[in-house]
Image (cartoon, rainbow, N blue to C red; front, side, top):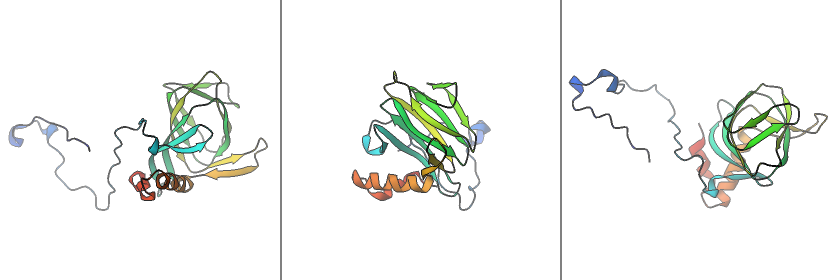
Length: 183
């Protein structure tokens, strides 16, 4: 539960106007905020398996905008996947390191990465990295491909929702638990 911010305003009439909350109603039909206080939780029920020793923790699943925000946690080295983007991807490395076989840079703790639509690359965790956690915002779909670019599968906000629903049902939270992340 979120605690209200204490403003220490003794009376509104003589208060600093910067400390007076907005007085008008919010727009009709506006959806509620998503506030996740502990996104780096160790609670395994919130991390859905997405591969060998890799998990995804949903943060925001936007069905009207066609994007999703999630944490990817990996506890192994090596190639994770090769994929092409239909939309832009933003990433922030929280822990560990990773790179793409197709580039000469390494994303390390504290790095921000922008990936343009249309790029294809092979996500790899270095052999000396025991844990990697990255916050990804994925617009559109990830199309999994072989080295020649032939499609082998895909993920988008809708396939992710189904994976999270199945996981939450399996761990006892119920399939509808996913709704807390949806807007």
